[in-house]
Image 1 (cartoon, rainbow, N blue to C red):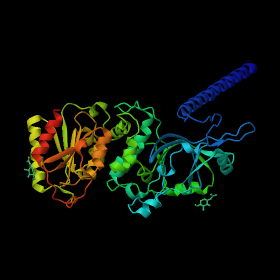
Image 2 (cartoon, protein in one colour):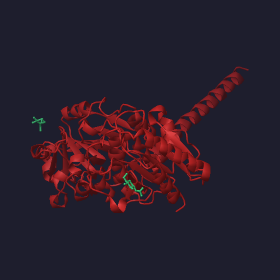
Image 3 (cartoon, rainbow, N blue to C red):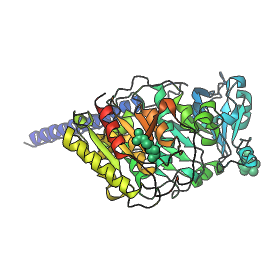
Image 4 (cartoon, rainbow, N blue to C red):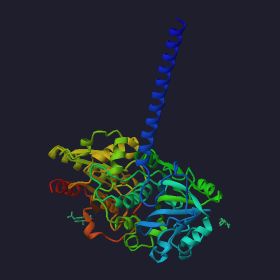
Length: 467
Ligand SMILES: *[C@@H]1O[C@H](CO)[C@@H](O)[C@H](O)[C@H]1NC(C)=O
Ligand SMILES: *[C@@H]1O[C@H](CO)[C@@H](O)[C@H](O)[C@H]1NC(C)=O
């Protein structure tokens, strides 16, 4: 009897052991799966770093080799550069190259990051020094860094601009984010209009010269867009940059998208158009380069159904009114006439017509409305930034109203970068990409007496929608 009990006990013990073993195996295999997924998401181009479980450090000296990863410039337009294997130590960026003549001039890569102002002394003060960036040989790098560096993996977006422009929706989204994404997306010419891309998502932004409270805009759209389009992105600021500098250790960054507005002003395109973005737009890329961001933002705004982004056939005209805002406004009677004319288009052709005061809409409503809009119009101003959420199509059009003689490229260039047709208006006269006037800010540019010929605008809408 005792023996049987003993046998049963042993059997039980065996079963328990077996079961717990299975559990161990179970948890092991999920760990393996997690690891495999992690590996897939690893940045696996470039230098071979196998064998480093957590990839926190890379060493390049051993008995049989002495090979430091060199910096590779993957994409470059003035002010918009993608580096692989970029080094940072003590707050200085290091490009390690045994052929320094292949590296573009330093002033087209970076700057001192001070405010951008026109005076010749200040232009000169923006030119980078050895404090901001050095281009060094592998031998010098080994001497400086020692036998290894701490790794910062994945894609880092390093913004070297001062706070000056960033806390403004237009500058943040339609310039900085646009330029960043236009540059990064040049690596994937096959991005489709539904926003599918093989690019790995950026991991982090380093704002080298900004505090945490210096990038948000008053209507809180900057944070909405950034958090909506890149939910996993983390942000570091100037004090984090200083923290890392004071560690005194060399950092090796897998891939860096380095953006610098002052450096882009060194480029010919930016100089001609007056927009830093023009340099990034000169890079090759997909026609649908912006669609991954637009798609993320749309989903975040609650437009989950892809088909709601496709032109349904019923055109949508959205007039963004500033009449109650103060600042730049239409002559009140002209505003009223324009509204009347648009409503008569609705009655005659069945178009959807929206007269929108953006400040009265929630952020989601603003973005959803813009995404459905075929023709967007309004007086020159930040409200026009919404055009970045329009779906480019054969009919999609932006119309911007100015005081006669006045013009600036902000929204014209934004529309152009997306492939949206643009018209500027001076009362009853319009102009387009082919016959743009020079930039000018005559008296009344910022005033409340901007004329518009509502009938002429309505006629132009019909022409565009029936084209
Ligand atoms: C680190 O940067 C500071 C500030 O520019 C400079 O004074 C110092 O000499 C640098 N240290 C090293 C080791 O390069
Ligand atoms: C356009 O506006 C100008 C100035 O208001 C006016 O003199 C001109 O007759 C208008 N032209 C047309 C075709 O309506």
